[in-house]
Length: 509
Image (cartoon, rainbow, N blue to C red; front, side, top):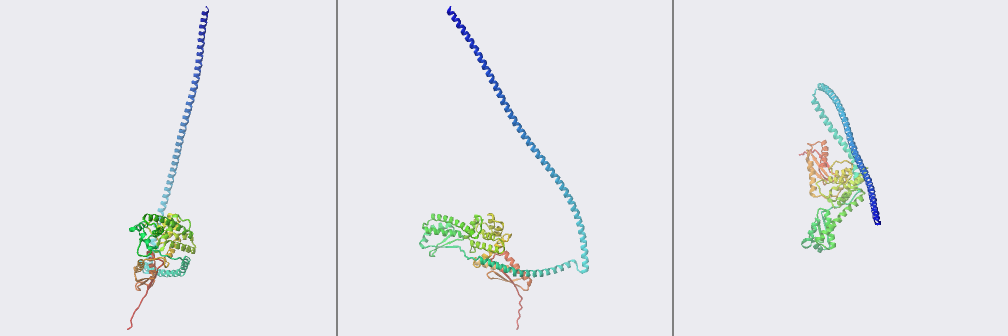
């Protein structure tokens, strides 16, 4: 009985425990369901918020795009309106101008008609006056005109010749002395020695043994030296001397210095020759630049382009008619400065123009241009002032002179080149210039004989007494002088003397 009760109690407790557990499971499930519902609601709210935010962003972007498009449309509309207004204004202006032109045209037509009427009236009055004068004078209009013209011609010729003579005499009395004084003072203040350049250089050696080493085996060394320098090397029977021949002074100097170094070193072979020649060429280039710098410093010229300084230094190794180009440029620069100071001009500019006037003779290339034009282009390239460029280009009359510097440079260049001993001329060229002078004067009508004397500095022209009168002799001398000045190149000046004489010869028997 006891066991029955125990079993029953156990069963009742189990059933109660099961019921309790079921109740607890239901409660837990209910809580979980509530939690899940809350989470779901939260997630729904979050998603809705995200959707709302995206919607608002998209809406804002669309509003921005719409606003931008509207702004563009408004700007385009404003531009179109402005353009339309400007077109309207232009149309109105054109219409107004057309109306003004029509009014002016009408006025011109009226004035033209009035002028035509006045012209006809004047012609009638002129004809009446001509008829009246013809009846009074007994001459026709053509005859009277011809007589008047002939009388005026003779009177004008006489007055012109007298006026020219008066002016020439007055100018000679005043200007000639002043000009001579100025030129003499200038030359005296800037007197320099003259050195004539040659086309050969003599290289002295100590013994003939060195001469053989320079020649080398089968002439290899001398051929290598000639190929490297471009200079002809003449080795003859002259004792202790080698002649370097060439028209380029730079190349001759390179060859001389290279030979000097090779003889001092003692190692003379083709490879060494090439090395020494290249080294000497670099040294000479540096010396050229240094020479240009020293020249500009000595003359007090500043602000030159480095390339112009190099070209100035290069002048040291160039010559013109045997005259060293650098010495000529320095002398011309000093002459220009002194003459500009005498005339009250800027001596610094004049000195600068005088130094640069022959810069076109030393270009790196050889264009087919006159050296004055080439020098002007070089100065323009390196930013020299226009008056300096014009003076450089006009010192041989290739371009028109625009400033007072140009004639000063031209005159000083002629003074430097025309001094006794300054230049050396070839005999053939000298004789040709004399013949050209005589033939030029012989080309004029009435000239019988011509004589070029005083080394081409004076030209005597003998004219026929029956062909030219005394008045025409002065005109002839002026014409010959002008033609010589325009067509010929000569140092200094040429004096033209026209001689006219009448000889009466008779014999007493």
